[in-house]
Image 1 (cartoon, rainbow, N blue to C red):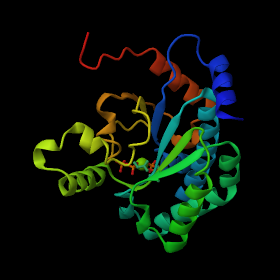
Image 2 (cartoon, rainbow, N blue to C red; image 1 turned 90 degrees about the horizontal axis):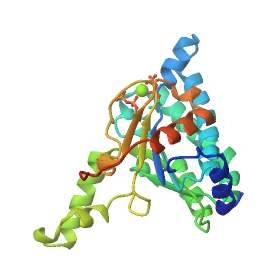
Image 3 (spheres, helix red, strand yellow; image 1 turned 90 degrees about the vertical axis):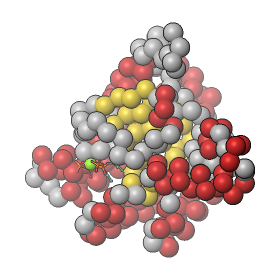
Length: 244
Ligand code: IPE
Ligand code: IPE
Ligand code: MG
């Protein structure tokens, strides 16, 4: 579906009142607990989590969300056992192999935020190739946060500003222009699944005036209806930005 067709489909299917968020970000949490509940290894939860990614990215396109940013691996997730980190890398390879053609075809622009160059060389190469293959597209953006940490992102932005500008010219706009999300629309809605209510070093700057939504659903159970509910909840929020 082209992005205009996706937007038209979204306009029909979206709630009658309320606005559609332009940029939605999701902290996809709860894979491990989902598996535990089923007496399965954590890997099974991550695998089911990939299915949820597939469902939700498709639905986001159908709704007409312009940018979807997914927190897939934080800069702190290296603290997990080596085997789990390696399982997650395996699933990332698998996802790129199995889903890239669809993203290219669906006019999706794939982006990566985070220091993914710390990953194994073959993964880095796959990511660079995947991003390049969607480079000619002009539809919705799918940004995946890989080895991402907001504090590191901000420190890097500060360093780049300091190298370019005198201190009195480093303002909010200058910092924003150095963030990895600089090409994305402003963050409207930030969702975290699994009942945890924290940001875990995700999009700290960008979340300044985002609407926050914490849902109890574990990520592998998050589906099309859950995304629509989140969008409807967003539509019912009144954003004030400090005004009245
Ligand atoms: C989120 O699920 C996936 C990643 C962090 C990669 P978790 O693995 O954190 O699941 P829980 O929090 O242990 O349930
Ligand atoms: C946040 O989830 C990171 C991702 C979803 C990729 P975590 O499960 O790592 O967060 P904490 O450790 O509970 O804060
Ligand atoms: Mg977790």
